[in-house]
Image 1 (cartoon, rainbow, N blue to C red):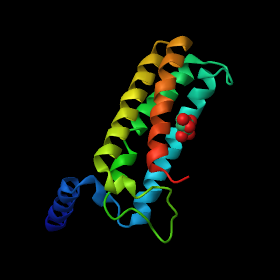
Image 2: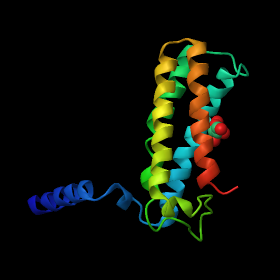
Image 3: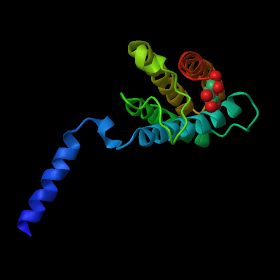
Image 4: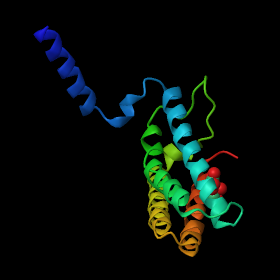
Length: 153
Ligand code: ASC
């Protein structure tokens, strides 16, 4: 029993020590993960956009929740674009090969987006629609810029 425990603990420690990308056993797992994160991002960002554009009634509490979700989830997709996850025969991906050829540019685009959505979260916390509107545009532009360069049309 003691031996089993130490094996379990050793495996646990080893799993913490490996790079985050190693949490994906297969390329399709990484593709599914990043698509899931980006879908959540798009859903909550879209809801915020509806409020910023007056298509959905502004509700400060739900805007703040949306923006917090967006700020957190904006950190997640990137480690799932590791080497060897470009394509999978079992899961289509819209990722363009430039992601792996222009890594610094892709990283810069992802960091720009994360910085802009952090500003949206701060703006949403003020409870003021004008602040949300002002922060939303540059954040949306940072999504679009990355899609234009790195997502298949
Ligand atoms: C969204 C969404 C995107 C971005 C982008 C902004 O709501 O799903 O991908 O905004 O369209 O230009």
